[in-house]
Length: 402
View (cartoon, rainbow, N blue to C red):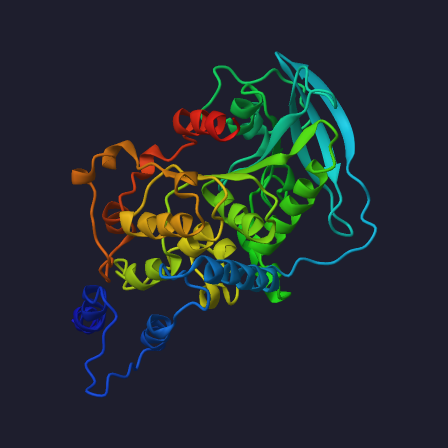
């Protein structure tokens, strides 16, 4: 009997929590007793300092870009280290129509960061080629990007056949570009005992006042700076191509380095702040899960800008977004490109499931109290078809490099 009574009492406490998808208060003064409700309220009141304003004049737009760049630089905390050792090539293997070089960079004291360089046959100082920095998504690797065998860090195997969709760097080198493939921190060759331990790395970095994205972008920035020194690369045609998680360092690099020519944003576009506010439906235990894991967290980020603002700030440089989102956000970015005088430099595609406008949700505000699956459906995302969209990217690359 006591067990039944205890179960009944427990349900009295659990059921209301589980049923409360939105975070609300019944107090007349509008205050929240739950701390979660309080921080939700604080988040709702916050307006990022560098939110893009579609009414900007061209002069105001440039001033906004400059301020945003300064804010990003402060958030990323790139270390200033003098006299870093130069990267070293440690292996070269010939492939059909190109070669793969394995290099090591040394961006931090005590740090070794390997990367792969794919160079088309015939490219040399007298026959320069455009170059693209390829950044993988969560769980990806430079070997996967290069079409090599996962885990074969010594490049002893033959390339994987058939070529996988995710072999971003391989697709590019076969198109005549020099392609550089990197690992994300704590992933693949940078992993700990073979475990892709993003969480511990992110936690330690946050404790030191840095962030996972700050480290990622810094490592990639060092490789990008090295690419500019290659005598067989056309420095006026440097591209950054990011898949999924890799779009985050792409936005950082694009914001900080105006010399980057173009960008391949292979993910859906969303408002991170809105995503946190609306995905509040509790799980069966009454727990509200955070939309993203800790490697996405940068202290102060949401006080400054959101993802659509950062893509808008890339104007007038060519950008392609390949996996949709809400037309609301693409309209905002298109306005930035109109202001910059290059409306044709922004291209975007939706998932095929939502390619027809009548199949897309046209909403200005995503409702609160939803779970992940509902969120993806409302913002026109088809997760099972999340892959590198070579069918759209490669023709676009040909076009922007003409």
